[in-house]
Picture 1 (cartoon, helix red, strand yellow):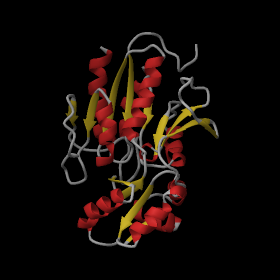
Picture 2 (cartoon, one colour):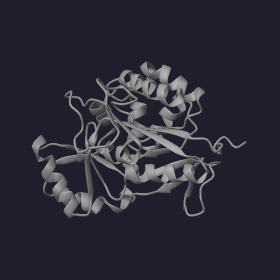
Picture 3 (cartoon, helix red, strand yellow):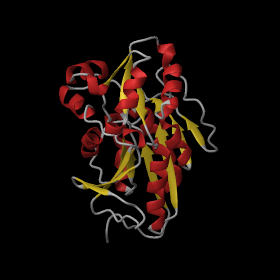
Picture 4 (cartoon, helix red, strand yellow):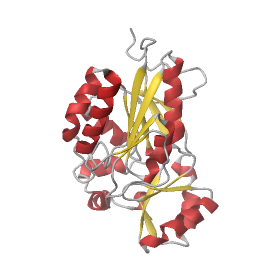
Length: 278
């Protein structure tokens, strides 16, 4: 049987952010989550990575985690399905390497005029203006990882040079210019049309059309995870860097986890799956 075509029994899907959630946001390590990851793999539960990271970056972790499931890159800029994944007829896609790419957001090349206009009022640097060495210094990534982070297609992270309290003003002006603006773990992100929630909904629709009743779980820690968390049945939030929790998520089935990163992720997933798989 095709591994993506499961039987009619209920199916669990897990959608997860990376930095500060499945990954340690300083070391980018996921080994404290290995126990939960092993259970996910043995239970044949799709683990769908949902990140502001680029396709190339997500591929690196997808390979390290031995995943073959779809994933979402650049704040919902696009979904990437394996080439053998059966998509419904209404899903238009482009073949990109070994994937079927379903674009949701506007390509960055079409947004730079608006981003330049925004720069006339505020002082910030875009990833596209930074060297690989500068990206590595700002993020703690290795040189190789920073190269992957620089290959952006739908979402432009920016580093404000002005006061941190100008973020709200920057986003207000970005919206006026027709850009989306959202805070991720470290940076503001400028994009247009990308939507983690819409991307999650599309993936859920694909699995439902395969005849399964789906129970969906989402895990995140940042404001840009809110659309994803609203789209799932059970939302799990990690603590933010300052020890609080993201705002604006009054989800009917919300679990707030103490701690952040792969250790907290491991505890939360094991607890949830113990109930669902028993």
